Length: 398
Image (cartoon, rainbow, N blue to C red; front, side, top):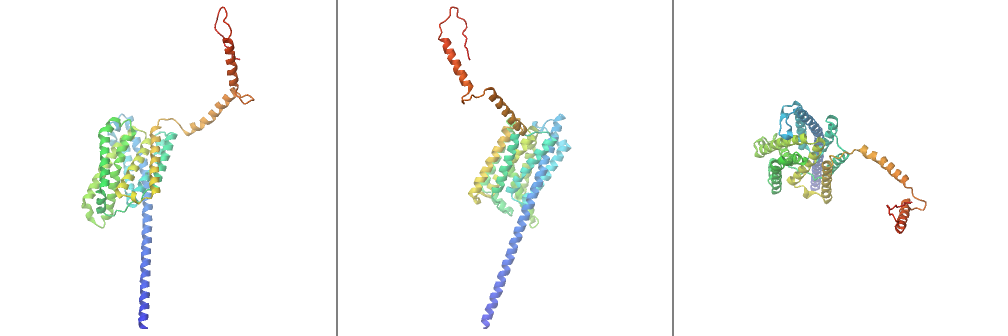
């Protein structure tokens, strides 16, 4: 009997221990999910705030460049750097810097596949502000192109793969040294070198895609550096040795170099081309490069379903169509009011043409009978014998 009581006590204690462990595990899982949801929400809020600041900064810098051009300074597109002495341009740069800081912090809480496409909001902000502050116009085709760009980017966010969690600089080093990313980084650097040294001096002033392509391709290094430095900042409080880690300084140098180059060529693009064209195309190209670099760096395609892969590719094609509409039809003067105004005018024209040639009661057109009778008269006249003094023939059309 004593043995039975001891066994019962052991079972009860074991069950109690298992129950307690299960409750603790469930509580930890719930807390982890709550923290993850909180981090994602905070990252999205910071990304939206960043988009507002960056979209506003583009308009401020564009206004400063236009003022300098009216004052006779050398344009930035021609190699001038007079904007460095203008306080309005520095105000735009400061606003852009604050937006980039907010964007930097957003990458600490949310994956790049969520933060980067939210930059579409900056396109809308810059479009609205440019119409009020700069007097620039965007035709109906361009507006539809912007809509397609945003739609395609939204679909890419919905179907984008989840980012793999990297928690240490050691893991980041392993990712950066993988052959796939090394080949990708080498290809991007080669393209940038060709664009900067050969293409930009020749067709940079006439082709909007040259300067923007340089800025966008460097985004692969910018975002990768931001993610790595974010890991270093998060771990510096628990492990101060990350400050002396070689990867920390490599990422910092790469970030500074890429940002300075992007600012230079973005200024040239803004000074040479329309803001409403520059920023949407820059957003699309930059987002595509960042998403592709994130996929290659973290190898996320292997975890995607076939539907998500097809949707992602379709979304990318939608973005390409939107960019083509923005670039190819930018000089076409067409608006929604003009399109609506053409409908009643065309209807009136068709009505007048029907009144001029009314159909007969038999269903056939009157013009057919006139042509037939005229042809018979011509044949009859030509069959008559010639007169003594032949004059000009007269064709009677009844």
